[in-house]
Length: 502
Image (cartoon, rainbow, N blue to C red; front, side):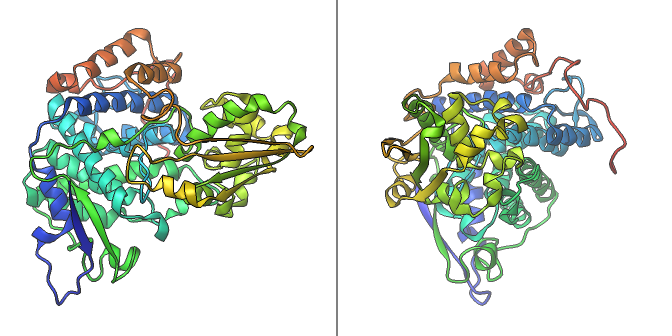
């Protein structure tokens, strides 16, 4: 890996495009390196993971509406949409939109946390949709996905968006654009132009993840993917992009991030070096914000030591800066303590999550979020006793550059009314690569089976899994079938309607 210094240059000091970060990413994307076997295996895992969470959310309102929009853009020889018959295909940018929303809705797919946050599995819907529409092979697709992950994860390692209240899709859109450059074997300059456009169009504020969180949280990554697809299409037609997009006097760094004196060091693979960043990411066993995963597992472990919930005086979670300020009481969001809050808000409230996990000893993507569950009197009472504190040691672990030392959990101190204290801690979730029960292929399949029970037939699940097992050997015709149909009687919004503009 090589670190590239990225800083702002005044217009009177022209920066050659070959020295710009967007060009460096484009060079990496156009480097035709082989894909490691471990990477191929993990890409297959994440395809299963994406399908599982998408199908588990297939009839939720944001997903159904995104699908309704895609149905307004049918295209022969286009791309498939989760849940729909494989014989029906749609314009790739709209398939990417519908599938991206489905993947994101449950907040249960893969994650990478460093200087910023990311769900790099969001790269897959856009890259797959274009691969299907442009008749690419399974190997082409795998190479594109490896690039998408490499781009987004390395940007997340170096450039913090959250500090300046910018949404994380600003690192996703260039990942999709770069991945498409690899998929379509585009020259470096075309990829460079697409990345510039994608970055320019993808910057948005983080209000979508603040306060009363709305359904846009699910749509935002799909929007980033759609931006990447459309940016590549324009670049392939010869259109140019704002540049230098990162380093310019009026660039995103200068005005949206650190300002004119800002600088970052972004790591990228050197020429000929394999793209392995996906191996640093991790998926979720539980349907909630990633920083809650270890704490859910910890709640399961601690609950046996509490005999009566009324005996609890207080629960304090000592954790990282990010956890405290994003999903903890440090956020200052009263909605995170409101039993009538939206599901999107509750899955970003560690106080709610820890209370329910502690009481139930399980976590379910539907049952744990119902209004009845959130409004249960004993839960609301317990929930109100939970607070978070930033702990410098946990912040240090969160930001450790060594994957083996990086941790996202915390230490929990439960104080009972008799003065007794129950204390325990957990650094990483059980499903994490360094956790007690790291996820393997069988675990991804089990997750798929749980989330698709009653939704997908056994024969359809087997057909899909057989394609994933042969991923790099798939022909273009076979790749067009890399989706999952649901049982027709289960699917809502399966016909084009006239509710909107399209």
